[in-house]
Length: 89
Image (cartoon, rainbow, N blue to C red; front, top):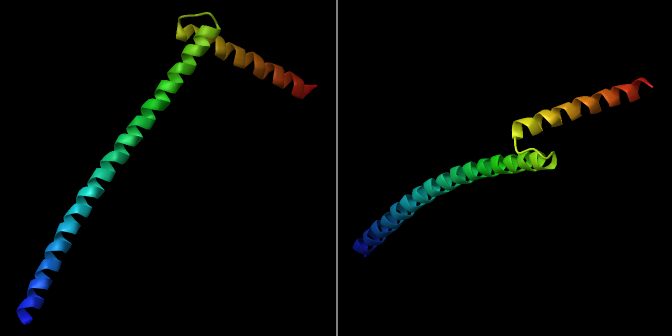
C-alpha cells in the first residue's frame, strides 16, 4: 500500500513537471505571437499611411508624394488663416 502511494506521488510529480514545462512553452509561444502581432500592426499602420499619401498624391494629380504633401501643407496653412480671420470677425 505504501508503495502504491509512492508510485502515485511520483506519477503526480511527473505529470506536474510535464504540465509545468508545457505551460512555459505555451507562455513563450504567446509572447512570440504577441510580438509578431505588434510588428504586423505596425506594418499595417505604415501601409495605411502610405495608401493615404498615395491617395492624396492621386487627388492632387501628382505622382510625386513630396509635392502632394507640400500642396496639403499649403492648403492647411490657408485654412488656418481663414479660421483666424473668422475668429477675429
